[in-house]
Each structure stands twice: as C-alpha cells, then as structure tokens.
Length: 205
Image 1: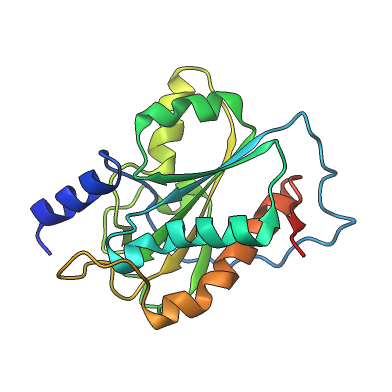
Image 2: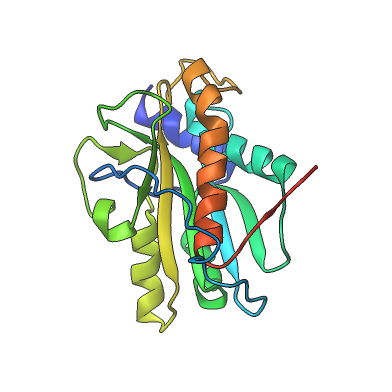
C-alpha cells in the first residue's frame, strides 16, 4: 500500500500520525505475585493508549484489544483506556496528569510469528529507524521527550503484537487468524502490567 493511501487511512481513523516502534523484542513478563505487586492507590492515575486503525486489518489489533479489555474487566476510576487511533502531541496532558502511561500497538519486522506479544520500555525500542517498526510515526518516547521539556513526568511502557497483514489492499475491519487468536494474551498482558504498577483490574463475571 502506498504511503499516500496509508496516510489517508490514518486520517480516516483519527486525523493524526502515531506511536510506538519495536526495537529489541522482549517477551512479556509473568504477572508479579500479589505479595510483590504494589498496593492499589486510588490517588495514582494510569492511562492506556490503544493505537491503530480499525480499517487496516492487523493495524487494528490494539483497538480490538481495547474492545476486549472493556468486555473482560471492570476498569477502576483511576485508569483510563483510550482508543486513540493515532497518537498525537495533544496527549501531553495525560503525561502531566498520570503516573503511568502504557501504549498498545501493532509491530512489524521482528522476525517472530504473528501473534507474538512484546513488552518494551520506550528507550529500548523507540529510538530506532530500521525495519522493526510500528506502523506509526509518533512514538511514546517522542511524547515523553516533549513532556520532559515542559516538566511533566510519568512512567511509560509499550506493549505490542507482531502482526501478519497491516496493509490490506482495501479497507478491512478484522484481524488475521493468528492475531485474533493471540488477542486474549495481549489483553492479559496489559492487565498484568497495570497490576504490576499498582492498578489491579477486576475481572467481570
């Protein structure tokens, strides 16, 4: 798909360019035991940015995870889940207001099988211009760089999935089978990361 068509697709989803680039792959960590996870603190706030375009097949893996996460868990008042489409610098306010920010995104070029889930710290993967990249332009580390100039601070982590087809020849809503099958793992990884950072979620009955 041409760069012009991809830009048009991104514009159709949210009107801006976006997000998190995959560098050295890191497998998701196992959830911390309850005794090791920080205690829940309602005064702290977290935001999760689900980045991607629902119209572009596997590029929509994070928005699909957003839907499944809301269906699976009760979300506490101090955690915001945001289906952002494409990230933009107007999200600086979240860095000011939140203690923890996660991004969830499609990644490509890792060499691993579609459906593989990763956890990265922003500096471990985002200052990278090679083939192992997300499908978006603005990365979490870029957002944090801009925020630091304004005195804003927050912890930031990126979660992603290796995708199979992020560039369908036509607009298509839905994931390839491998990514669809791995979607619950991605959602559980996001939930485990929030719990590890002191934001436990309650599973719906």
